[in-house]
Length: 358
Image (cartoon, rainbow, N blue to C red; front, side, top):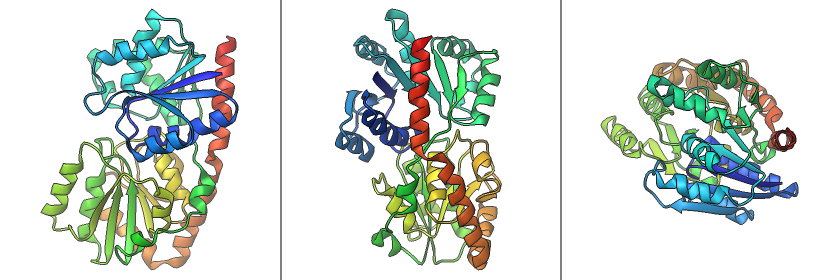
């Protein structure tokens, strides 16, 4: 098959990381796989994909991914004989739907979250429903994501399914610790997430005021909220204890060097960063929200949404009880092992073949 994936950027994020892990495996399975990215700013993810032989088409560097010219640019690319065009994120989803009106192409998309901001715009609902009708299949990445999507669309659609996201489990479970990270402080708490409004790094930063001085927080990622986080760190006097590490291509090694891994969000789909954290062999913590609760409950440690003190208390409990901490690690790794990306890749390719046969 000739497959084109379309995404907004290759900055830090679950959908972006999915491209890095999924596309080379599809290529190894004998398919022609290429990627279209609206914002072609070079990032570690961009370079990893190039290194693995994935051709990347890009439209501009920086600027808004909602630039209307991207409709025309994407339409021109979509005309080049793809068997499947698979979109991720809102702008590609919408612009590909517009392009499909003008050319015959089989569209598939993935809903990566249990919620999104556009669902709160009542005036936008009609456009969302029209857009999803242009797709042969809408893949949700968790059971809750499918439930919420069906509720939002309000239709008994037969083009919706669930395929769980996957990770390269063994790479994270067997990573060698980064020695530079270990020198940052005695106790290292690490969060890997884009600096965007879906995520809730401010709660983690505030929690550092509730923890002893020898605890340090490492935030791996970048994005539009970086200046906001830097200001909050300065206001709280945490410049020596909160470290913004930027974009990294060695996340498995960073996690292996950490003492605790955490995900803190307002909502998620099925968080790849969380599964990777659970695979790392470190105790994993997350706040109790849709998309995190489903995979963490009964395995890792849940704390209440936006509860900085509760997060700090959970860390201290883990630190004081070695048996409890080891139990959490064992449970987390057992859960993460069920989400190896090889299974996901096979299910995606099978779905493509089924869609093309309809």
